[in-house]
Length: 618
Image 1 (spheres, rainbow, N blue to C red):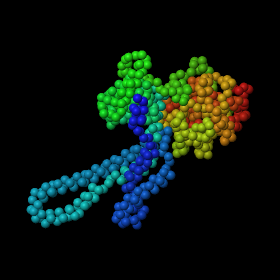
Image 2: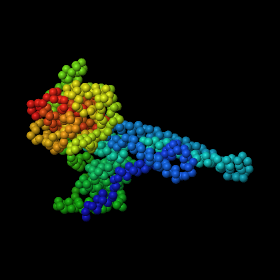
Image 3: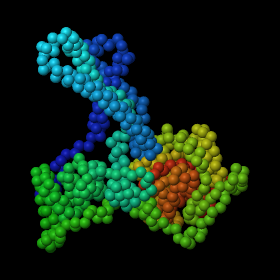
Image 4: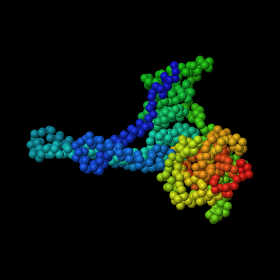
């Protein structure tokens, strides 16, 4: 008996059709917008009004056509709504959108209540009248006024009541929904946000209950996940063949349901997903125990019986292969983060990187700390820094990383954010093979590029960077502004363009990650004509409640965001060779909104400002 017969994915077809889902959403939007479309049609085409009223088919066809045209035009005019989850700044707009929709919903409810009150008042009045009239119909109608009012009621007033009942107070709400739906997150946003929670869970070693109960460091607002939320998280992981996270979230859903929490999700569904995911993680005894629970709840379940027999056969075969006759009882302890080993992925320094993000494994020794100093930096007596020199602190000795205090004022930060927000788009990386900019799953943020001509503040910031570093920014890239979204991160990377690996290049630090991640790539900046990225100047424009550190896995440094400060390091030695120790990462933001801006300074123009050294690694 093979796996195929009892494999959930083969016995229960799960169609993943985001295109069909989007089409369905569009059709719902079309349906909900018909009332608005009809009103618009009559407004712009009054000549069709009489024909419109006479021909229902004409009314339906024209309304559908108009809505189709409106949606088509809106798809060209409105900005893309995908990847909203990659920027907290853009997500804040949705908060106000939701508030407006709630207000519109309350107005609809109020209108419905007023309508019902009017109908109820009419019904109460007529109830008393009909009780009286039906007790003695002839006697009641003997009064001519009663006869007249009966004729009037049935001819006029009941028609008015009919019109009142047929009124639809939902038009305003539906119209508002139709307008805002274009900016709603889509399925990819929901999936991206869910994956972000799992990324945070892994990086900061947080169990599912921590998220479910809102037990996060530095939070100001409490938020909890329901059984249904946890189930949806586990189901998403399952559909991505991520059984490790599917187990964690299905187990949390089951734990909350067993504690008495109400849910729309059936316990049988949770056990179904959980048992199969546990099986995929190689834990047959627990898979059998969970499947037995499923069979007890739902004996007629379409997969449970077959899966149970299959799991028991596999376990029997394993026991025979080991020369054992009986299996020890399944582990009854709840599934935790460390119950199963997290699968390895493409990033060899994953454990070191994530440990640094948690503040673990930082190689700041007392000897190294004794070599760190603070000073006033006047940019070699630069006139603009003489009266107010920059405060400079050493963050690391080799490679030398410094932090500048009060590098940006609150007013400058506010202006930079204001200029960047309308331009924010999914941050990109250069493809190592083609040199073309593209989005990547390991960089989750949105960025914008600002020129000195955009505003005097940008020109002033650029000049300040030049004054502080002593390097010209004439050949530097534009000021890049980035805002990180849910679990926003940028995994370990180099800022400079690499040449083919040279194993004879001798520098300090762990070369394993360098070698394993090394990729030959074309000159990514050849089209700029400004050489490689010689240095990075990184401004922190917000404090972050938890997470969001800049870490250097090769030599074990972690630098934490502090609003208004900036860090600076050289990516290249004076010889122009890359300093591979500067491979760094932006850790996922656990709590907060992280804003940064950076200036990548290039080689050209620095010949006399940073002359070549005597050795390859000076």
